[in-house]
Image 1 (cartoon, rainbow, N blue to C red):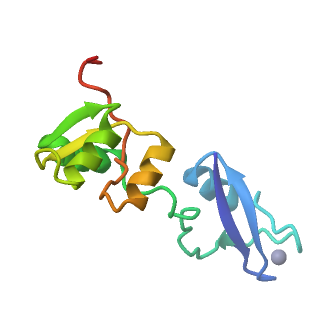
Image 2 (cartoon, rainbow, N blue to C red):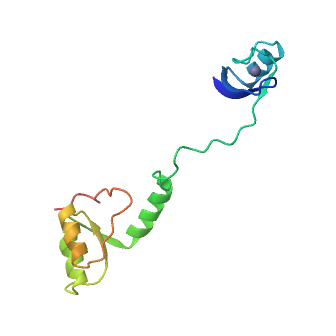
Image 3 (spheres, helix red, strand yellow):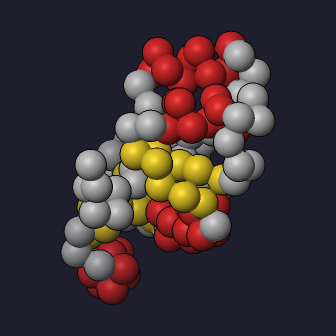
Length: 135
Ligand SMILES: [Zn+2]
């Protein structure tokens, strides 16, 4: 089924009507079966339509494939540290351990304190599957 905005050539009213297809509309209109609900005129045409914008594009974000590619790039040279993420990120930040990119899991509280301490951390766009659940 397809909905068309139709316009009555006599009264100028715009109304919607459902058809099986565009061809179905043409056929019904040609036979005078499509009538204006206001003045019953059978002289109707498809109303010029503005393109219907998709409902609120924001919130959808970039497509998943794009995120996955971005994440793969971020993780390429990054070491998985699992639950030790907060600890590792902090000691790297403090220069206590070799500077390198790491990723792992952290609780919301851990993440908050890292940020409070000025440790540069960022959430990954997608959930990470741990390499092989070591430890
Ligand atoms: Zn009309």
